[in-house]
Length: 401
Ligand code: ADP
Image (cartoon, rainbow, N blue to C red; front, side, top):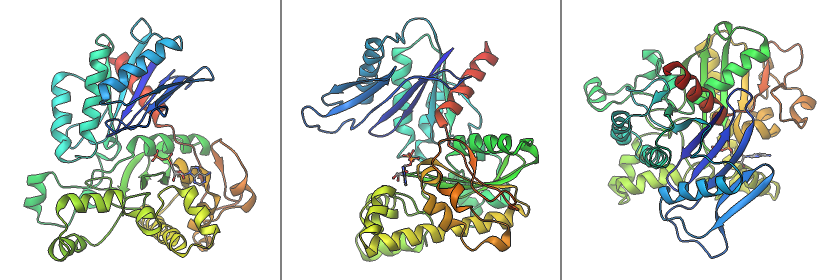
């Protein structure tokens, strides 16, 4: 049984063909720079299968072309997607609004609803819709399943999901905290419960998903009770290019006094803020290299990042009262011992700390990094959104058969 997982972004498509039970990946790849000019000879599609990389050069004017090239590369690498054997296609969809809170079989009506939710996620849902449309056209006989990044947070308690603005305005415009990265928070929190050897319903935990985008969640007994991202993925932690939390008054101030229109605000807060806005680079490894050269702006960016992260850890400790695990995941969380150490520094009176050797040991496995006698275990658990989407898609197709 194989599932193709597609994550269609505004100028890229990431994909994996995998076996949902074992998690074995048969092929994976990425289409990049869709709709952008490219230099001759620089690959726009890179496809890995069976230890071999196949590449495609030349511009990809739109998503449908990108997926068609991907299907050709699949065929060249010995995986005929249009033939027998593909059980489902699982699509990552960023915003499910109030409408979608579980994996959903794609129909024309579902696609229309996802498109309508673009008002809430103008930077994400349109690209997700194009990805689904293209995949449906290329694979008309294969069930397509949408898996929503917001779903895990659908049941947030009212106090956590409500913004303190005029309630009538909020109700009229769907304004609430939706939360994102839900597939990752759900998957990782499930792994944590397994690692602790406890039923998920008995575990209170904090999950810190620190990638290019970053979010924190507080989970009580398997249910999310708070999360740092909001109406959009802009709220919360400092991210690669996004500001995270700020005084909304900044927006009015810039519009009134600095000639920023709403597109300039979107660009500022989503693409030119966060680590990039403060230091010039959004990639954490580059940030660390700059810090090592003594770059003061990079050092400040790091300090702001850690300061915000610690705020959320503190808030969620209080939210949850009793906490059984704090877990780092995604690119930065899985790979930066420095961030993990600085995020938990000086918290021994709260039962939180990392063991220097465990924290710096190189490993790809889910693992403890706190001392064995720690009151609150601190863990590193690699996320795997593709596997979670593949499993959700396969389970839904099986259940609807
Ligand atoms: P995305 O949100 O794009 O899925 P990832 O979860 O892949 O992001 O995380 C990307 C981030 O992880 C980048 O900032 C990258 O620099 C960082 N990262 C990856 N490897 C390391 C490492 N060894 N040390 C520090 N940061 C790392």
